[in-house]
Amino acid sequence: MGVRKDSVVANERASRARHRMPPSSEPDEELMRALYREHAGPLLAYVLRLVAGDRQRAEDVVQETLIRAWKNAGQLNRATGSVRPWLVTVARRIVIDGHRSRQARPQEVDPSPLEVIPAEDEIDKALWLMTLSDALDDLTPAHREVLVETYFKGRTVNEAAETLGIPSGTVRSRVFYALRSMKLALEERGVTA
Image (cartoon, rainbow, N blue to C red; front, side):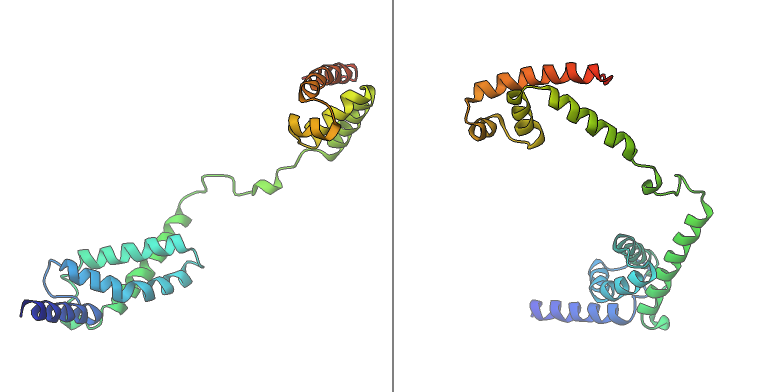
């Protein structure tokens, strides 16, 4: 008997949530769950259209709407009919209020997008590549090839050693001396660190 009574009560609560809120001032937790199950999905779809597809904002609006339904359960009685029109109206008003409050506040940051900020000058980039190429040409072929393998091709010391057919210790040594020579070659061209 107890199981049947519980299911009857649950069905009654779900039915009340579908159509009306209880006239009492304190909402039933199970009734609120039923209200959420019944109305949250359609309400979210409606609010998504209002907020131009911003899902996070729409979920916030639905949550606030259901909280207001919880707080105002006493105002929603049998005379009001279905709850969904009330929920839709509250959600729409929350969206409108949010829009108005954003319009009333001044912009906190410069509205210009970051893409407008000029990128590194292409001429400077071309000059740097020419200077780097000239400095590489000043290196011995052995130093140049270890720098190309390790820095420009991004290979590890072991990979460079295998590619060049020399021991990895030799690659490390050549990289050290090649970088020192490269630094001197760049300083001769006016580039400082």
